[in-house]
Image (cartoon, rainbow over all chains, first blue to last red; front, side, top):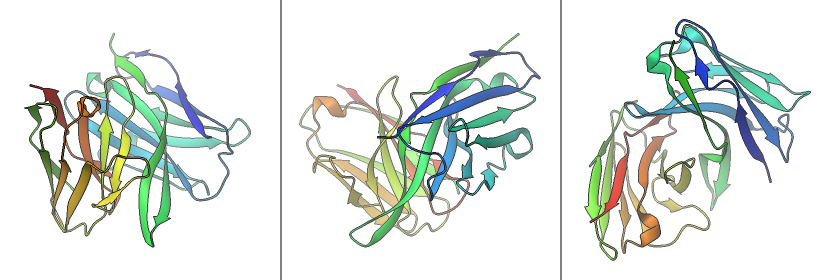
Length: 126
Length: 106
């Protein structure tokens, strides 16, 4: 059973870079067909999709954050990572890593965030 | 794609029927899911394709809609259903969530 675990600093200073890692256990990150995803949750904006990296290595990120986001994968460590630069207090949030997969049930294809990490709180403050 | 969910919160009693609505800013067909989140936990998928129940989810949960208007109904609220609920469109990237509905005990 695949499990995800976020790790990284809980406190980041304004204008610096937020760096988080998600470790995948119980399965290989290189297994085909998955989007390894970062999602964050704030009290003000709710759940926000940050971006993902596909098994092939291609990435996509939210245009609202696009220029500040880098998502990468380290297959040797079975991890994927998020870097968000030039952070402000508005980036204070609980950050989740998740796996998005396309499933088919009853002939109906659908996408699901089927596995999530527990989430990690990152506070941006001096 | 903007997802507008209502109400933002509601108070209900065990046994009540509860309905939450979600409206998309454009046609998303039935590419909509509903998630439940309890405090301190990650969201968990309840419904997919607008009306299909995820495996293991009780049948008191149901969903409907297509295009831009969707509903999630809990037909007989149980104590374990007091939580927050979010709609999610997966029609296009970026994936977008509704603002959430907190279901509280009256």
